Image 1 (cartoon, helix red, strand yellow):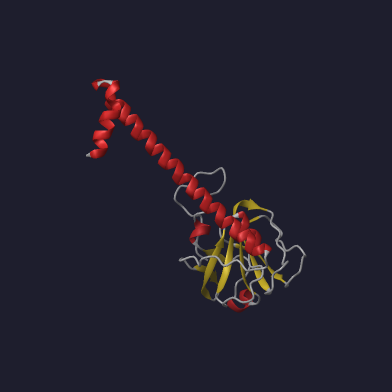
Image 2: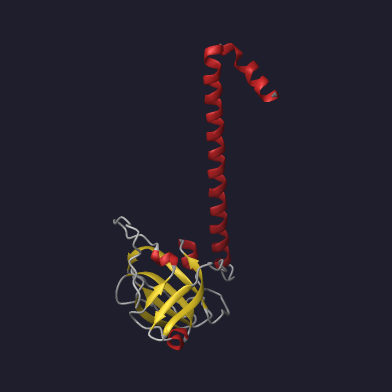
Length: 208
C-alpha cells in the first residue's frame, strides 16, 4: 500500500480524472523499460557466447557444444543408425566446427545447419581428427560423402548445393552403410524452412 500512497501523492496535481491515466502510462513505460533491459540482457548473453566460441577457436581450444536431446537417424539399406549430435547453426559455431577436437565417440557427430540451400565448401584446417563429411540436401537425403584429412586446407564440397552437413569420425559412413540417397532424420532437418515458401506442416521427408 505504501507504493499506491506514493503514486497518489505524486499524481495529485493532475486531478482525479487524469491521475489514473498518468499512472497507467507510467506503468506502461516501466514495462517498456523492463522489456528493453531484458532484450539488452539477452543480446549481451548472445554476444558473450559468440565471443566465447571465437576465443576458443583463436586460442586453439576445441568448441564443445551441448549434445542435442534428439538423436539423428540415418535410414540405410541395413536399417536405422542412430547418432548423438551437436548442432552448429550459427556463423561462429559453423566456423569453429570440430577444430582442435582430438577425440569423439563413434556414434557422435556435429550437424551443420545453414539458412538456405547453397554451394558449400569445407576444409580441415586445425582439425586433428580425420572425418567423414556427409552433405545433405533440403529434403534430408544424402547428396555426397567426402573424406576429410587432418589439417588439409583443400576445399571439400559436393557437386550440388546442399542445406546441411554432418561430420562423423572417418570410416563411420562406410561402417554403418550410409550411402548417397539415404535419408537423414533430425528435428533440425525436418523443421528447416524453405526460403520463400510457407510451411504447411509437412516436413517433406519420407521413409526409404
